[in-house]
Length: 160
Image (cartoon, rainbow, N blue to C red):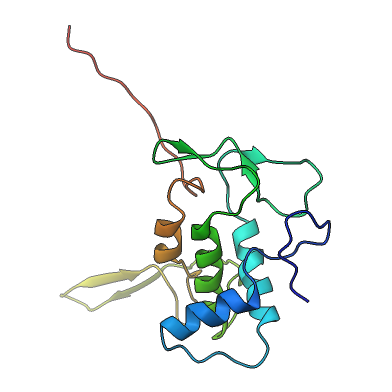
C-alpha cells in the first residue's frame, strides 16, 4: 500500500498511484497492473540521494519534507513535497518497469586488445560486465534539490 501522507509515520512514497497513472498517460506509456512495486523501487533510488537542507522532523520516515531548501532564490515550504520530486519518482518508476534501478555495482575490468603492427584498443568494460545505470533527466529535474554525487574543488583567483 502506497502512503503519501507526510504526517503519517508510515509514509513510504512521495508520488501516489494516481500521480504515476497521470504521468504515464500524458506520455502514452503503458503501465503494468501492479504500480506499488514500481513506486517503491523509485523511492529506494530517491532515498539514496544527497538532498539539500535538512529533514523537517528527525523522526520522519523519508528524506522529504525538508527545511532550509532554496530554489531559484525562494525558500521552499518545509511542509510540502516539491512537484519535481514527485515527477522524478514517476520517471524512475517508469524506468523500473524494465528492471532494477539499484543493481549491484561492480568495478569494470579493463580489457585490452592488440593487433600486431596496428592498433591497441583498451576497453573500460569486459565482456558481460555492465555499468550502473544513470538517470540524467531525473538528476536535471532535481537540480537545486539534491547534491551532486561527485566532488568539487572550489578556488578563487584574484588579480594583484
